[in-house]
Length: 170
Image (tube, rainbow, N blue to C red):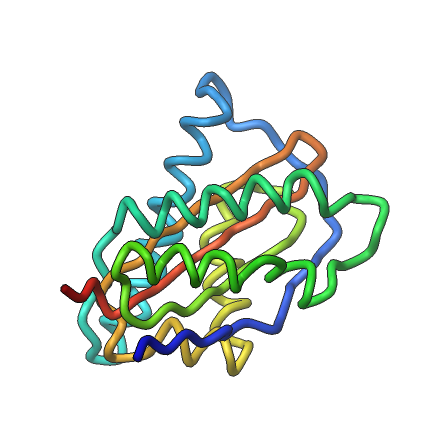
C-alpha cells in the first residue's frame, strides 16, 4: 500500500520589490533558482548528518504543473493564499505519482515576495525549516529524491514547489 503525506502548512509572505538579475531568460533564471533551492535543502540535510536528495525529473514535472497552477490562481491582490490553495490538487499529484511508481510523496510549497532574487533559496529553506510539517518533510531521513520548481512572475511574487519521495518501487 502506498502512503502519501501532505506535509506543508506555512506560507511565508513578505512585502518587498522585485529586482532584475540581468540578461538571462526568465525560464533559465527559474531553472537556476530551482537548482539553488535544491542545494539549500541538501546543505541543511548534510548539516544534520542526513544524505542528500537527488534531483528527479518525474517529480519536477509534477512540481512544474503545480507551479503553473499557482501562477494562474494565486493573485497578488490577495494577502496570503490558504493552505488549501497552496496545496490544491495534491491528491491528483499523489495519484499520478502512484501511477509512476513513486513510493511516499511529501509536498512543500513556498509563496513569497522577493526584493533580491538571490535571497529566494535562503528565504525558502528558512521558511520550510520554521514550519514543523515542512521541516519534517525536508529532514526526513528516508527521502532520497526531490523535484523542485520555482516560478518568478514579474509582479515580484515567487512560488517554490518541492516534491520529495523515498524513490520508485517496482
